Amino acid sequence: MGLESCIRQAASIIREHEEATIISHIDADGITSEAIMSQAIAREEIPVKSVFLRQLEPDAMTLVPRDNSLKIFTDLGAGQQNLLEENGFGTDEVIILDHHISQPCNTDYFQVNGLDFGHTKLSAAGITYFVAREMDSSNRDLAKLGIIGNVGDMMARESGKLVEPASGIVEDGIIHGNVDRHSHDLNIYGISTRPVHIAMSYCDDPLIPGISNKKDGAISFLKKLGVNTRSERGRWMVWEEISPEDKKTIINGLYEQMIAHGEDPSRLICEHYLFPDEMARTALRNASEYATMLNACGRWTKPYTGSAICRGDRNEHYRDAENMLRNHRSIIRELMEYILGRGVEELSSLQYIHVGDRFPDTIVGIGAGMSLSKLNYNKPIMVMCQDGLIPDRTKVSMRTVEKVVQQGIDLQKALSEASEEFGGAGGGHAIAAGAFIPKTAEKEFVKRVNRALEEQYA
Ligand code: C5P
Image (tube, rainbow, N blue to C red):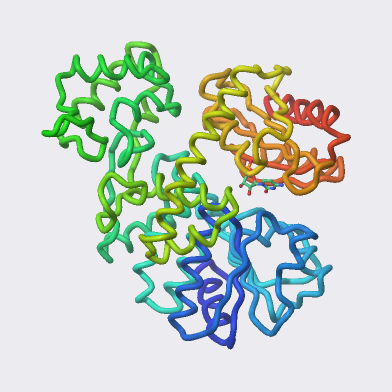
């Protein structure tokens, strides 16, 4: 069966049921998947409810209802099929819309997963969007959420843009009229909310000599180019507001700066996805920042707030999310300062730090990624912390950069294999992965992962 017929079958299974429960993950991809699917199902006038999970694990199974509804697992489930089987779920009551690696299982659950068709850059929200569009072509308005989920799960990171079949979601959004695509644009984050020199100085992929981590460097660079970076009222413009000519001048200047320093400028350019129906200078205005807001909601255990925003709430939930985003950013900054202040331990193939119970385990991965730009960029970073729910369990997050992945490093493989040996569980992606392990195994675990990475480098 091809991907398209798999999507068709999923749509017809959903339409045949009289009620549905969506079980989804708490990150941006999971929240957008849930928001897409729950709206598509409600539009069919089928009663639907949703459950968000931090992870599909034995303790969380009690939250999955035992009733007659169809259980639709989005952004989770592929890697935990044995758990579904152990809990007595039959094939007639489960479908899985996921993009994680499948676990071999004796029960043949119906699943739509891009990986089965060689699509490694199509997140769960992408799959879910295609199923929703198949249910009714008027669901094209939900393409915007599909884009946010894909971007939030770093599907655009390697190529600087969403690629087939995810690029088709962008086309749908453009046709519907709530998505603008800015191709050949500057690869910086915060194009709708950060003053342009700040956004440039935060750029860590690629690192731009004289500008990354150097706010003053970015200001004098812009001054030297003579571009207009202030509005008529004198406030700093955000990247989105810079004129097309000035954008070109800045990009060319950065290009030359990188060449002059012997750096590869190819990652300077990317594609941005903007939402003209959202308010200017807010995080909802582009896919990357929107995804961060949803991640903030999920990581601070308010995924339903994120879901309400995806459905259009711009009042109470949105204000709540803005506060969460502010809080999210300041705690991540604190975590980063803690990691950089304490310093990491270096092994041959990784650098690591244990942050104890100082920070919530749901954000250490983000802090790990952000610290990496200020540490040895070429060595993957591992951050361990106490599990938020089970104190004798340790949460592990690892991050690396695209350049290192291209050298053969696969953090998902290293962490899932190593954690399994110690009775834990892990997963994720080559560039960003996580695991849970028993606290007593910490020391041996670090050595084991280091060995795995050594082998991958070899
Ligand atoms: O938690 P963190 O942000 O480090 O997770 C990075 C990636 O690893 C995510 O895609 C997450 O779903 C995955 N992960 C996993 N199993 C775990 C922890 C994280 O698959 N036990």
